[in-house]
Amino acid sequence: MPIYEYVCPACNKRFELMRSRSESNLGAQCPDCESSADRALSSFSHYAAEPANSAVRKQDKMKQKMWESERKMEYDKIKNPDPLKGWREERQKTLGKGPEAWTEYANELKAKDKKKKDYGENWLGRDQ
Image (tube, rainbow, N blue to C red; front, side):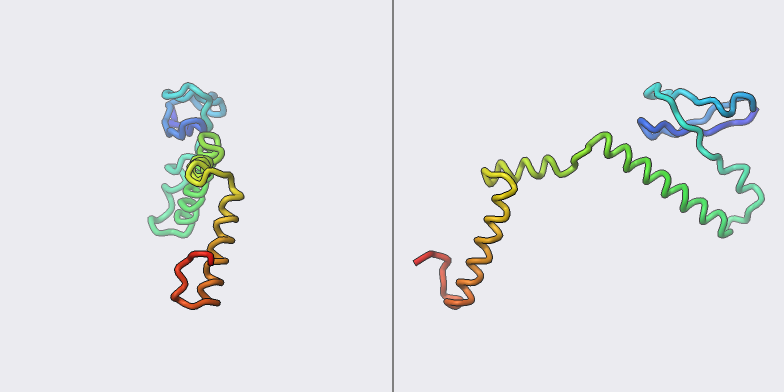
């Protein structure tokens, strides 16, 4: 009986199952989270005839890494759809306002730089 590799889209776990060829197209259940897992392309039969440094192997490894990174990105989007939310909330708590406070702060810095340019380096940052 052949061994088939599976990848769970929910928890990104890779696992193998020994199944008959008639069951090869059927899905599998993840042993960790018990969700439906997709069958992965096994590299054993494909690489058996290829030398270790062939362009085909390198290209396939690159495609495999790309596929895994895409699955990880999808997983991260599901897990944390807005990764900057915590940062925005922290900034809002610190400044006491929403995003408009950042533009006000930037405008204040520009005004201070203009006054330094106009009045010289001896300007202390106080309005007179």
